[in-house]
Amino acid sequence: WQQVLLSRRLEQRRRSPQASTTEEGEDHDCVLFLEHAPVYTLGRGADEAHLTFLQAKDKCENGGGNGETQEEIQRMRQKLSRKARGPGTARLSVDRRMENQIVNRLSVQDAMDRLAELACPVEAPNGVPIFRVERGGEVTFHGPSQLVVYPMFDLKRAPFRADLHWYLRMVEEVVIRTLAHYDIHGSRDEINTGVWVDSNKVAAVGISSSRWITTHGFALNIDPDLSFFDTDIILPCGIQGRGVTSMAQILRERGFSQMPTINQVASVV
Image (cartoon, rainbow, N blue to C red; front, side, top):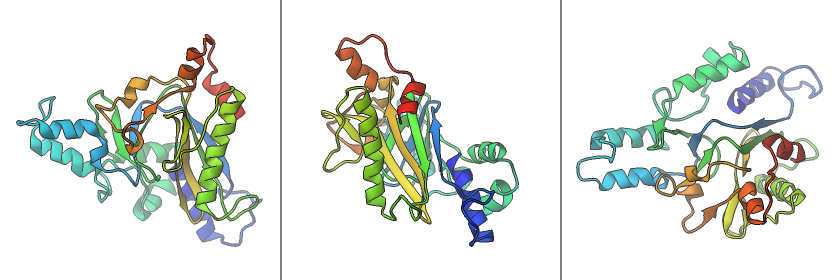
């Protein structure tokens, strides 16, 4: 969604650079609230070493644990490489050719579906597809009962600042205040991005921008299946020795039986 919306917004600016933000068109701020089907994504800071299942496959003398040959394992790595671009790779992105042939000719939904078809994800041992994306950060999981929020803001417009570090901290602050609404104390880490409860991450944060228009955002664990963060599959956010938690897990440990729904949490955000 965000790649298509961003491309259309930038295209409108190229065509009408002096257009008012109040005029009808694509150039307006918005926030996307999503709940994904299970998927792993590799950010710009991630390499294939953060996919621990690939490391385990490399150690198998005759290939992968599911019968893959070393050649097949190498093809997985190539599809996920930071340098890999275009159809047939695992990268979800929009280049100039795709803008001209797809994004600017089709409806938003049709363009989104077509771009997804062009990417060729790698499949994790649990059957979940893995894509490389344009956000900052390393590897993470998105799935049911996790609230994913993608603000698409022009940081050169009030009340924002053209400062990505400031913006990142403001995104974290939104999560911290949302957790506080449920009497959960979230905090920042001095080294790692995201929001933490004690030593466990409850929300992943990864942002990107193009011409100061932001994409990506945060993923807040409400009540996802935490087995998807198994370190035999991925190293969540590329951080060793730290765990992953959820709002529901925290509240259950306090004796609560009724958990907030994803729509309820979205309304607080």
